[in-house]
Length: 460
Image (cartoon, rainbow, N blue to C red; front, side, top):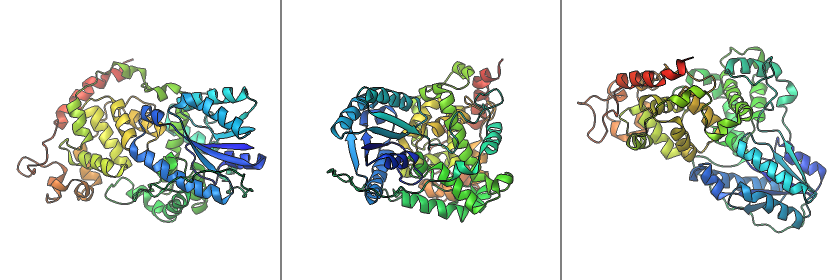
């Protein structure tokens, strides 16, 4: 009897761990809810509901191939070894199969589980599937992890072979084991329907349509020009390998033409790989540390009032506020806007990036430690291959450039709907509605203050 333990890999296709388990013997599946651990990891209510939605669809998909999905619960990771050990004894499990995860706490959890299971003679097998290329296999000439994205990307592309992105089919159905279990209830979000089938449809629709225009349209939040697959990638409802395979099926010569416009979305997937490889190579990133130790000397501002204004979308900068409203209403934010609001919090308000990272984790339906940490440290100039410390996004110019007609701002900030296309990027005292705040800080002053505070990053 084999046990497939699902975590952030909520699919049945392109799943090496599930395929191997079922090839070995009759298989059961479990998912372990850990409410206290979720709280400690800042997993928000929206993502928790999305997990449950996808678990319902996963249970249905597993039922079709004869694998019962059982739901277990304990408070945190420390309780899992004993829980799984007892489960394996009860159900006479020979081996537990998992897909490896890059985060440090998850690595330690798996090590503890493997040790506990070994005491009762139960095997523990980990498989790759989180990344296209396994962390630790894309290294520089000194056999070290790259600290700059472009050389990593070039090495990743050179290392990529056809077998790396050839996906696995759904396993052949088995005769279901005789076990009673309660199917998981469906909790569906209208904005984010769960399930592998929906994720695959969204992937195919994007690569066969919007991907061709992605390079030109991706930075404009008023356009529906992105894949919106990030929530499904974060929970493994679709795999990165499936995304790459779909891209190359649509554009077979893309790897030989990295400067083509169609390459832009593949480039974003390679950024995802970069941040995940970094998380494995530098475990301190899982613990909230600055990648650049010089950043430990930055004097952050601890104003709770400023932080609350940012969270609530009340900074007086329309593009920033619209982005934060979008986050609060939908659990998602356009990538260009993630950079804008992160730069604003860390550079304009001088608030520690870790507070922004935590808030994003609590609010985002696609919350993912590697990408969230990587993005925040990039914007704050504290990370690996981050933007230079002296680069401070001007939210007014960003608004004028990427939302020139105020389409996105009007869709999120009702108070500004009647303003002209010129006024909407930063209303003056005469045009600003009475119920919309004045700018929380003046841009020129904030920029000079940030340059002074961040200059520690430029010192030898």
